[in-house]
Length: 57
Image (cartoon, rainbow, N blue to C red):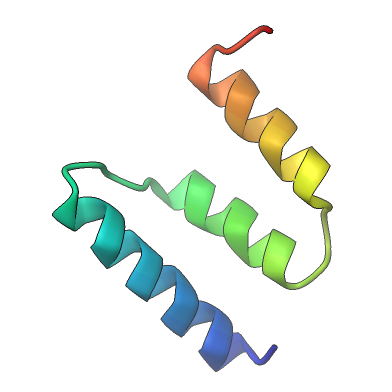
């Protein structure tokens, strides 16, 4: 996936979430970029997101 495609995907997902009343911070967008660039796994992404949200279970 090209950088342009990744940025478009992130922009579209962010817009969709904001339409539902949620917000996406820059840290989460960066994690998404890393995931889409295959720099981290989905499991690593989910672990970071859960830790950020304070989910322990």
